[in-house]
Length: 274
Image 1 (tube, rainbow, N blue to C red):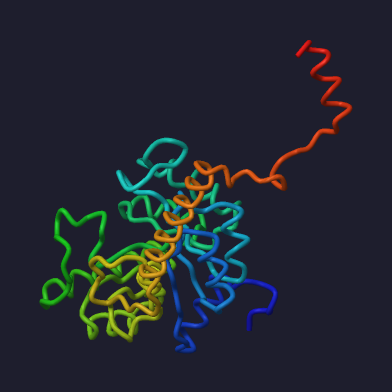
Image 2: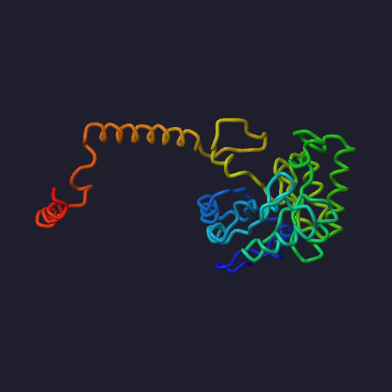
């Protein structure tokens, strides 16, 4: 068991899979979301490198944090996209020193292998891979036997090079369950059915940040969009009241001002000859 004052390790997450325990996972972008996830008891967080910081690590508390290493045009590290294995190693070591527990990497197998060979816990991506969508389009992957076999073979390649886990995105539920049962890696399911090792959602979908399109697999538990709309109306109303006070002289009032005694003020005017 994990000590109550420590966060899980790779070994702990693997043990959860062996015991058949369900793992909850959220993608978060702010310290407030990370702190709420910790307080609620979420097991794993996914945080992009551009959002990860000592403040985020502290806010995440006991959560096991996957740090997303930027890929191609999807982000930069130290001002440039990651391109070589050395680039990825440098970024991984940087975020590891900051408290990252594992690292998402969607680069090629040879780059992923270099990271694994350096004992860095790597989470890859299979199924619908957003950074590869020019090849597949945004659609479910694995609905035919041929595609399902390709996904399974991809998993086995990742397993062979030593990956810790993989995000299993938008694959049929029975395919997701079969894959999870036949790999030692942690399958982080996003639209991959209940048989995946973890259920992974974006905090913005869970909280209902927008009224726009949500993926089929997303479930919304709160309507933050309505609250954001209400707060925006309140902002506008407050600003209008401020303008009105400025125009009428209702602001500032004496309590908002700094006073000066008559003696000092008269001396000030006398010095200026006014």
